[in-house]
Length: 361
Ligand code: DP6
Image 1: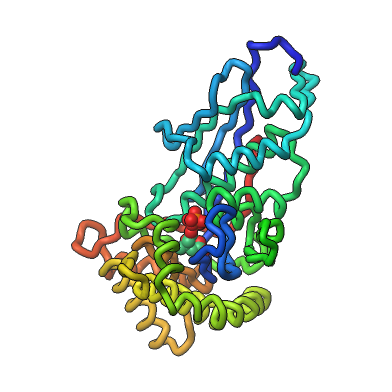
Image 2: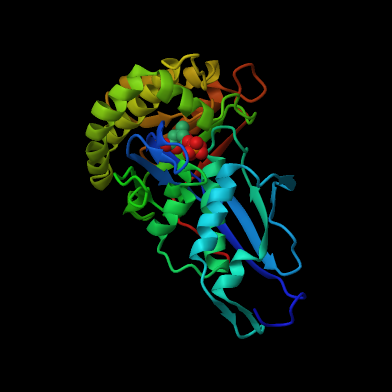
């Protein structure tokens, strides 16, 4: 380490969007390495509306690793953060910043401490994949700071160890998380199926039913499902392996009818698996179920799908409209059926396109 020791701070800021799964990840075969029981597919969303911004800083003045989430300090002593930071430190390389006269040697990263400040511009832990954007952003920012040489798919194996779905936010556009076969998890990584320019017509509308934190975290819910649900075993072995190639085809061909049919079926099976867990887990509420009815009735009336829905571990609806014209009609219908301030009213709407990672470093 060189430079004016004790006086410098090196900082990197990155911004990463959340991703929304259309083939769901639910269930781990290895809890420590976060290895899933099936492949999953997601769409990375527009970072202007839904993203995490993270600044990472290193300085010899810092006496321990610290992290702030939305301005509040959080503990880094949990296993996930420990494994995650250890994994990243082990891959750090020399940093040579001639302009500012700072050199950090590979071996020094073990001794230097980090300060991390992360901010979500959407509800945290309300089933809007906040941890996905958060861990993806952290790995992206730290990779820049520590001069990691890995490509995005390799980085996704680190992000995965913070939160499984985070690995998919390392890429923009349409992304597949391959479950992998290796015990060490090296082949459990995210690959891009198509970039953010592909299927431009698709519009995503998020109807925020509630921004309250969910009662059962994804990790706890998944563990209980793996332990108790027979439906999950059937799903992982028989259902998802068939749906993955079908979804890849639908995406490749801009085939909205197949995309919608698979997306809705996936969401419904995921929530059925939650219900098949003992004790049962309920993530959707009455408003969520009413949204499903509105979409299902509309699609049936038109004879061909106009809109698809998916719900993660929370009551908020993520809706995919087949094009911009349909998106406007969808917003009108949502306002009509779920007016704000009414009993079933929605809190807000977020409208966005697919998009790519922005590197603000
Ligand atoms: C319902 O990635 O939050 O959103 O790996 O335990 O951190 P952990 O879980 P997490 O689970 C997300 C589950 C889901 C479906 C999905 O994103 O595929």
